[in-house]
Image 1 (cartoon, rainbow, N blue to C red):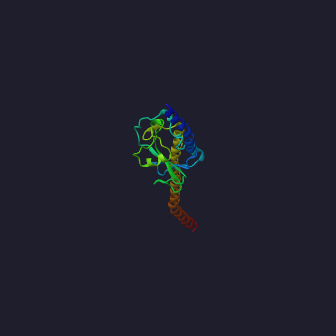
Image 2 (cartoon, rainbow, N blue to C red; image 1 turned 90 degrees about the vertical axis):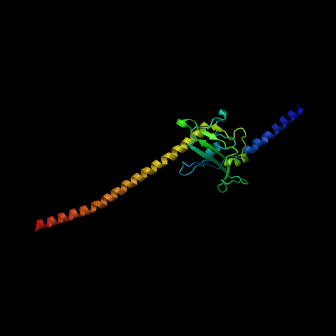
Length: 208
């Protein structure tokens, strides 16, 4: 009994230290979203947005739902990489002074339903990075439902990504129309020149 009480007191004294050390980490400096379906990675650099999604608080997951079944459709999935300027950290996925500190996998839900987030297991390539930031023993290797805030952010980013090609296509169509107009004028000039010569000849004959 005394031993158990001592353990509880010791844990209670140590807990604030852990919380302070976690809070001191701050927010990531960049979040990168990659997928074979993307022409280029999507990046989150806005400071206010980065403050909302850090690995320690995990606001990208709806923790109240707990672990859920894996999505049936995993064709629309993305790797979400959290980077931070963290001296002393090193991995094969670093970007200069930006160190990879955490990674998850996000899959879009079907028919507008909430998406899914997978926390890597020890069998995943990037798992070795995550425990150095935060260790979620009960949740690693499991699927979770994405939070409403994260889902809204992803939909905005995916929508912006899809509108860019439309703008480019519009520009291409405008350029094509311009080139066709120029080609038409070039082809028309010889005909107009010939008509002018013919009219001048007829005019001269009429004068004579």
